[in-house]
Amino acid sequence: MDLAPLALSLQIATAATLIAALAGLGLATLLANVRFPGRDLIDVVVTAPIVLPPTVLGYYLLVAVGRRSVIGHAWEAVFGSPIVFTRTGAVLAATVGALPLVVKSGRAALESVDVTLVRAARTLGASPARAFLTVQLPLAARGILAALMLAFARSLGDFGITLMVAGDIPGETQTASLAIYDAIQEHRESAALAMVLALTAIAIAILYTVNKLTAAPGDGR
Amino acid sequence: MVAELAPRTLHVRARLHPSSSFALDVDFTAPPGVTVLFGPSGSGKSTTLAAIAGLARPAAGRIALGDTAWFDADAKVDVAVHRRRVAYVFQSLALFPHLSAVHNVAYGMPRELDRQARTGKALSLLERFHVAHLAQRRPPTFSGGEAQRVALARALAIDPHVVLLDEPFSALDRELRIELISDLRESIRELDVPVLFVTHHRQEARALGERLVLLEGGRVQSIGKVADLVTGGHDASFDETPLDADRMLDR
Image (cartoon, rainbow over the protein chains, first blue to last red):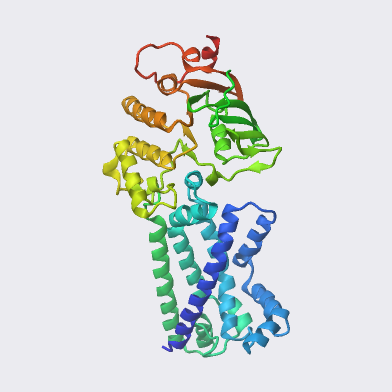
C-alpha cells in the first residue's frame, strides 16, 4: 500500500483540527455564553457545512479564495503560492468540513455545565473570564475533547470539498479518500481495499474513544 | 419599620420581570444580622437574592450597601457580580465538582494572598464547620450535610459584605439542620454583616432570624420581628411542615 496519501491525510487533518479548534471553540463560547443580535444567523452559517453538498461548499470556497479573489490574490502576494489546488487549499477544505462539528458539539458541551456553578464562581469574585477558564471550561473538557476528535475524523475523510478546492494532485493534495477513488478508477482494487480498511480502522478507533469520553461519569455533582 | 441608616445596612428596592407571568416588586432594608425572607414558593425570594447578588438585573430600583450603590437604574449604576462580595449559598449548593473541598473554599479568597495563606485559611474554615477531614476530597463524594458545610465555608471565605442563604438546609434532615444552624449562627455573629436567609420553615426562621420580610406574589406583605410574625410551636424541635403564609398573616 502506498502510505503517502494516508500520511498526507493525517497531516492535513491535524492542521485542520487545530485551526477548527481555535476558531470553533471561540465561536462555541460566544454562542453558548453571550446573547447578541445575529447569534442565530451565525449559528446557521457555521452549521451549514453539515447539510450543504460538499460541491456547493467547494464552489463557495473557490469563489472566496480563488486566484482572482481578493483573499486569494493577497495570499499569493504574501506567500508566493495560491490557496487553491495546493496543500493550503486542502487544509482549508478539511477545516470548513470540521468547523461545524467543533462549534455544535463544543457549544453543547459548554452549555451542559450547570449555569449555577458559573454563577457561584462569579459571586466568589471571579471575573467572567476566570469563571469560564476555571469552572466552565474544565467541566466541559471531556465533551470538547470528544468534539475535537470528531472534527479530526471528519477532516481525515473529506472528499468533496477537497476535490473542488485542492484537486487531486498526487503527493500534493491527493489525500487517502481521493486515493481510494483513483485506485477504483484505475482498477487497483487491492490498493483501494487497503486504504479503505486503514481509514475504517482509524474512524472506529476515534468513535470508540469519543464514546468512552462522553459516557464516562465524573462530571456530575 | 425602623429606618436604619447604618453604613452597612442593605437597601433593596427592585422591580423585575423574570418571566412574562411573574413580576417582582420589593422594597426593604436589611441591617447587619439575619433577616429572614419568608414566603411560599414562587413568591420571589430567590429572584430577590439574584438581584442583590447582581445575577439578575432589575428593570427599576436601587440596591445599595450603606451609601454604596450596587445597582441604580436612574443613575445607571450596575456593579458587576464579582465586585459586590456577596456570599451566596445556592439551594443546590453549587460546589465545584472538579475541585477538592479545600480548593472550593479557597476559590473566592483574595488573589493577593499567596497559595499557602489561602490553603491555611480554607483549612481553618473547613475546621470551623467540622469538615476538615474532607479537605482533599471532591464534592461528588460528600454526603448532603458535608456538602452543606463546605458550601457555607466557601461562601464565608470571601469576607463578604452581605450573605445570601437560599434555603440552604432544605435537603437536610432535622438533626443536621439543628447542628448546622448553631454553627452558622456563630459565624454570622462574628461577621456582623447583613444576612438574608430564605426559608419557608418557621422553626428555621425562629432559630436564625431576628427580622423577617414576608413576601407573597412578588411583593413585600409585611416586615417585622420574627417573634411577632412567626408564632406557635414553643418546643425547640423543627416543624417539618412548611408554614402557611396566609395563616401566619392572620395572627
